[in-house]
Every structure is written in structure tokens, then in C-alpha cells.
Length: 376
Image 1 (tube, rainbow, N blue to C red):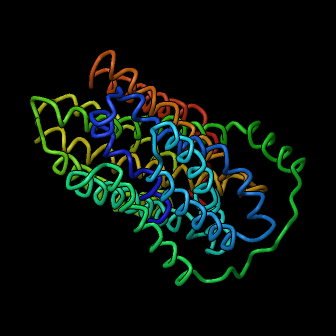
Image 2 (image 1 turned 135 degrees about the horizontal axis):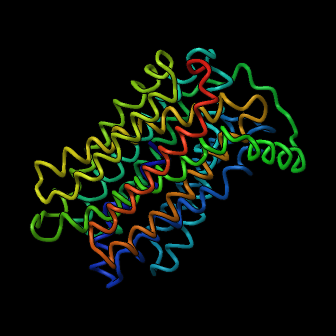
Image 3 (image 1 turned 180 degrees about the vertical axis):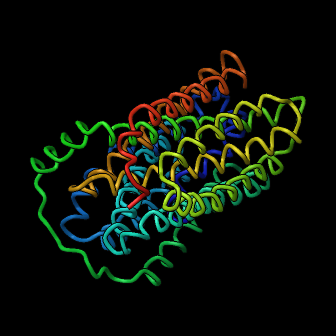
């Protein structure tokens, strides 16, 4: 909640930012891409800190720093200054994104890791949903900056909640991992075809998913929909499909095999994205629900796969997964706006479907050999 509400709070506000500042969609989207880029480049350094000082203490520092920077970015005097602060805010958020699954892999029984990771992913959907739902009504009543600051206030409260309820680690063993060791581990991971294929899932699926939600608001505010901003914000309730699908996918993967669940999820996501081309709310909204639930199901399976498939250096493997995940968010979240400016909503949809189908092909071709048993 504290991390993902603040990280994505500008997403639903992008059409308001464009209207207020007179900037095109792909420039407004940099408020999201700057933060996710910062997160992408920071996850490996945060994993080093987590190896040395423990996952929970480092996550506390991450949350506190990110909340302070979120407040500062909401008060920044210009879009450019806000983008710089959002970059640093994203770097601060990397501690949670880079270490949460590694903490679970250490503290949870091995047979339950996939389900536990699915529960964590469900929490990220609630965080992302709450950020959008809180920001838009406040923005409509006051301003888009006020909407971002309202989410930051919630982030501070959730940070305090994390400090209150999170137990101390029982199985963590500190290690002073050197940069050379990390480089060696990262190189080994990048030479493992199965792990590279899992990282590709993160890059392509997350890139397409963020592009989908970055620009659907522009479509719903314009004819033939012409919705109010608050009504557009309600579309993010589709995230609840991800809250349900994430742990469900983890349980299915443990029972039927990861690859089968992953491919079914990515196929369903492609279908859902394609159906958003139908210009009627009775089709577009259910299509968003389908695409959202399918994305988080795939993400749940792939993120757990990144941790369990690495024999050593699990923190580095989950960090590489997160690096790819948020690099995809930054790159394709911005590129989807370029397609949108050139070809409208159909251009964005075609790009997203192409990304999802590429991820599906990579999974089928490369991961089949790694699917020798259900998830560990």
C-alpha cells in the first residue's frame, strides 16, 4: 500500500496534467515513467543493502525515504522539478519492490512460497488501486497536485502500519556481498535461459499493462464515452480482479504447473486488451477486468519463478526481475503514448497486444524445458 499507491498515484491524473499544463500524453506519462525508471535502476543496490543489514530494516528505510520524496514531488514548482523528484522517489521505493519476495522466500515454507508471493502481489494491486481511487476525486475537487499529496498522506500512515505489524526475521543470515560477487551472480543469472525468459515476462507484460492504464483515461474522457474524471477513476476498480487472481494463480501453479498457468494468463490478457477496441463500456470495462486479472496472475507466477529457479543469489534474481519489470513500465509506458499520439487508442492497443504475444512465445519456447515439476 505505502509503495504502490504513491508510485502510481499520477497515472489516473495524466489527462488532467495534460489539460492543465498543455503537454501531450507521452510527456505527462513521464511522471509515471520517471518513478518506475528510478525503481528499476535501484533494485540491485537495495538487494545488496538487504543482504548486509536485513530485508525488514532496509524496507523501513525505503518506505520512509519514499514517503518524504513523494510529499516533496507533490509540492514541486514545475513539471521538470517534479519529474526529478519522482525519479528519486522511485529509487527509494526500490527497497520494498526489490526485497519483499526475497524476504518471503527466506521466511515462508518452500511449498508455500508461490502462494505467499501471490498474496504479496495481491497487496500491490490494492496499493495501486487505492492510489488511483484516492487521487482522482481529490483532484476533481481541488487539483491534480492535491490528489498526489492525499495519496502521500496515506503512504505515510501505511509506512507506520508496516512498522507496527511486520515481525522480525527469523531465518535471515547477514552477508557482506561484494560488488564483484553480485556482478558474478548477475552474469550467471543472465546466462541462464530460463531466468532470462522469466525476466522477459516482466519486461513485456508490465510494459504493456502500464501503457494500457496510462492512456485508457484519455479514451474514456473523449467521445464517444465523455466520462467525468471521477467515473474514469472507477475503472481502476478492475485492479480488484488482480487482487483475486494473484493468490489464485499461485495455488493453480503449485497444483498444475507454472508454465501452463502462465501461458493461459498471458493469452487471456491479450484477448482482454484486444477487446478494449470495442467502443462501448459494456465491452471495454469487462475487457479491462479480464486483462488486469490475467496480468496479475501471470506476474504472480513469474515473480515467484524468478526467486525459486535461482539456486543461489535469489535476492539478485528477484532484483533482476524487478529491474526488467519497472524498466518495461518506464519504456513501454512512455512508448505507448507515442503510439497514442500517432494512431490513437488502437495504436496503443496494437503495441500492447504485440508485447503480450511476444511474452507468450518466449515462455512456450524457452520455459518448457524448465517446467519439469510444479512450482517448488
